[in-house]
Each structure stands twice: as structure tokens, then as C-alpha cells.
Image (cartoon, rainbow, N blue to C red):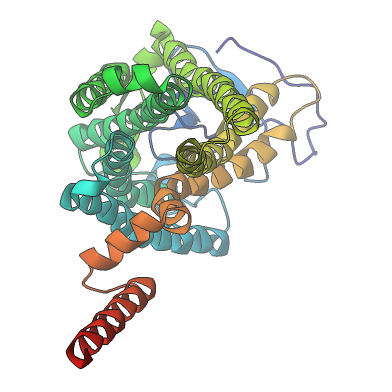
Length: 411
């Protein structure tokens, strides 16, 4: 980031700048940290603003209400989270609930698709891949919560710092690409059904999924250089080690490249999804008006149900990820003259995006259960329960069979 000077503020003002920080960032999350006491991380990676004594790009950030930093000897004793403890407790409780729901729901999705042959469709193969991605994301949650409460010292080693950031970043990219590929598959199935029967096969879908994960891993690869464990100059690493973006990433421009990659992986798929579902909706609308065949009508109803479920999944994805990009926009605006107050708003926007990130990984199985009867029945069977509708149908069949048998005996 190039140096920017904030608008003049009276020294006695609560927003008067008191310290200089170097802006650092990594991957797909945003966090402004205006004080060494403050830290906010988010799954996938982080944006940090930490004290820098080395030459490099420095940003003068406003002090959002904290006093001057303590000396290094007492720094660890006085480290405080960026937000009030009750607020962080609520966020943590919410994330723990999402963890339980997300692990159970995504695991059930994978088991259901693998267990029941009738559910091994091309669409469900994509959904199973997304469930696997979401499971990996939740495995990274404990480390994110630790960093949210106590961002330093980081005592888990450089490898784990890089690895959990890489896994979360890769899963984020894989989810975006999978949603896009799934929407393309639905577009061909509805708009070009004859061609789709030849082109869209289970074998090719599995190959596409492998390619998606390969692209996701390659795109997230720079995380191993971008993120690492560093400490302040002249301090004890045992006290000030942080899992954060490296000085090399800032100076080399790698940080800027990853920011653009993260943005492309969101806005380009959103544009493609908007176009695809617009074309699908238009096709189904025209077909409903032009066709009256019973078979075609039934097929269209099935298509509409599938498209409706996928559209809700896409909408949930956009809704959960948009606050992060809004927060990043506010972050960039917070350094312009007269916009110092925006920095504090940016912090809370990113706390919301922290929760929504995990909500996006937990909500899909809930949507499947609400909108897909086949999924509900399969889950009940997997858990050893028989749905009420199935029990009622079995009862009717038994009564009908018994009545037919008695009638045959009487005659």
C-alpha cells in the first residue's frame, strides 16, 4: 500500500493518530488492527496492521480509543482483544454452534451421496465436493478462534500457521469454482438436454472436480510465502510471535496480487452465476408457455425444484461473502482525508464477515434438508429412522395387500 496521510485531527481528539503501522495482508480476509493490543483474524487468512521498525510501506492509522502501547516487557500481560469480551463470547458461542451443525450436516451429505445409489447424480457429486470443502474449513475454526481472542504470541509453529491458512484459502476457492461448475452443468441440462446427456457424465464430472481442486491448490499456493510467523524487532519472539503476512509479501507486491486473486474469485463467478441463472429462468419460462406434454411438464418441475435449491445456495453464498468485500472497501477508504471514522466501522464489518464465513460453510446441508425431499428421506434412512410419509405409505400398502388377500380367500 502506498503511504497515505490522514486528515489533520486535533491532538486531544480521540481519533488523533498516535502510532505508525505497516499494512499487511494475506489471502481472503480483512482486518484493520490500529493497535498492538488489537487483532482480528478470519478463516482463510488475515489483514494485519502491526508495528514496524523496518523501512517499508507505512500507514498512519487512527487510534480508535486505545492508549499508547506498553513497553515490550509488559506487552503480553496487557494484550487485549480488539472487541469487548462479551461480544467475542457471543461470536465464539455462535461459531461453536455452527461448528457442530456444519460438521454433522456436511458429513451426512457426503455419507448420503456415497451410500444411496439413486443420489449419485452429477449434481450431488458437486454438492458432495462442496461438503468436503466445508468440512476442512471447520477443522480450521479452532485456530481462528484462538487468534481472535489472543493473537500473540503464536506458539504453534510456522508450519501450522502456513498450513491452516492454505487449507482454508484452498477450500474457499474450491467452493466458488464448484458452485460455478454446478451452475454450468444445470444450464446445459436445462437449455441443451440432448447434448447434456452426452457431454455431462459422472466420469467427466469427477474429472472436473479434480481439476477444480488442483486449480484451488495452485491459486492458494502463494500463501506459503505470503504468511508466516514473525515478531517485532528487538523483542522476545516468545512474547510477540504472530501468524501474519510477512514483510516480504508487502514489499514484493505479492500481497497485492493475492488481493486481486481473491477479488477475481468472488466477483467473476458472481457475474457468471447471474448470467447463467437468468438464462435458465428464461428457458424454463418459455418452455412452460410453449409445451403442454405431461412428460415435459414433469421434467420441468424437477428442473425447477433443482434450480430453485441451487439458486438459494448461490444467494446464501453471495450474502455470506459480500460483507467481507464491503469491509475491504471500507478499509481502503479509511485512509482518505476526512474518513478516519470508517476504520472503526470496517472492524465491525469484518467481525460480521468472520461469522458469516462459517455460516456459509454450515448452511448448505440445512438448505438441502429443507428443499429436497429425497435428501430428507435418505438422511432418515441413513440414521435408521423411517420418515412419517414412508411409514404411512407402507401402512397403506399393507392394508391394501391384506384386503386383497381376504377378498381372494372369500371368493
